[in-house]
Image (tube, rainbow, N blue to C red; front, side):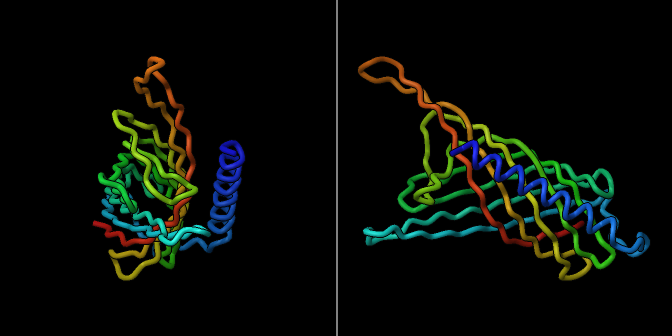
Length: 203
């Protein structure tokens, strides 16, 4: 199941790369009017809220995701960033936290729209449960998180952009605990696809 999810993510990412590449090759060359990203800093925040009610259950489960990013563009197309993602879910006593390093490839266009791809890696104190759309926390466990994303920025002004992103995340790690039979190890491996909506500010 994890293999099929990974293959779907790879195919989706490859399709996004192909689509953006073709779009940029077909776009007229108007570099003088294209927003210059090199040397700029981006601050952004987004959110995702999802709710699900299973058949036979009277109550629904929900999950809230709040990513906050800071990014610096070292070239016109390459940005290096850091990200904190706060997560919360129904029935969870403690909020989850994901810390990521993200590399972005941006494709600014003459009309101000900026498609982008990103990839990164980070750590987390928990992972999503896909079936219940809730947070699963593991005491004393730190998970690795692979991030792959594709999205678009739409200008609302000279510096403010609306931002939409589809993010693929794969959580991996292990959790060890003591039991009557000795130390037990649980291998953790979950994948998740999230759609994020937010705003960004270029400085």
